[in-house]
Length: 320
Image 1 (cartoon, rainbow, N blue to C red):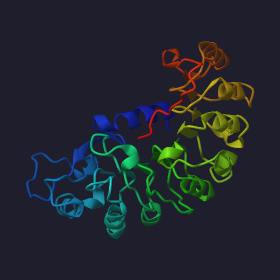
Image 2 (cartoon, rainbow, N blue to C red):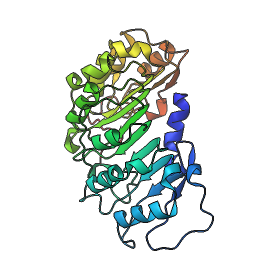
Image 3 (cartoon, rainbow, N blue to C red):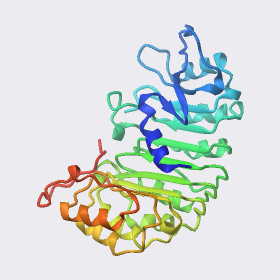
Image 4 (cartoon, one colour):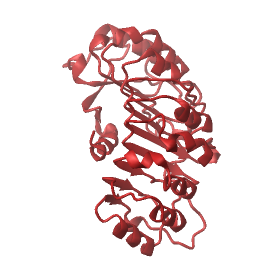
């Protein structure tokens, strides 16, 4: 897997591509079929609802009648209806109920909801463990929204990509990831967020992940969007998991010169292909030190993002 290309592909979701496939809106329950529907295997199907529809369940069940679910490789779940007050539990239950009808499903995004529909920290999630249990062949799971999000420790043999986009990732979820066995997992990304929105994980909660013991195939680690970014970076600087990585993302948080100095004085990182530190609070001098220290690595640490070093107000990239 080319992780720089994967990051670019993640950013293309809102521009109509997911899992290397064009995103196609699933036909709604109004019975009107858009012309020229692609073959089931040729699209990433997005299912959602709005005030004009009969609801998510009606749209989902209609989708099963007009698109052969046995050939669907990727599902994107958008708004399931007032996601700011109704949890994703109904969606999880529906997917689990019909899991056997999706033998080709490899990629799933739960909560691909734009901010104008529902702010990321307002999205009401639920226990996503049943999805991994019901889809043993799933290779990619992405979740947006951390409110009421739950994950229980488990073992999954096929999962290669696990991403959590949140403005506040519950510590219980972080611990569950560390306590799970993911022998095939290559890409792990967690937006840890702020305590104001439920992001209460500590460095101690990350310890099992940083040990790498249950993540033998991990090649990319993203611990991002944190208000304790300096502490996280300091822990990563000596973490055993880093030796096996090809890329590392410590971006989107409140990284200062203190954290960057810990990174520079820690274990060698020149084996990395890519180091992402964008959205930072580094001084210009430190940015130059970082660029010089990682001259052979693709480093994203744009000097134009520099904030005033005497500004005590530090903020993460994604919160509300």
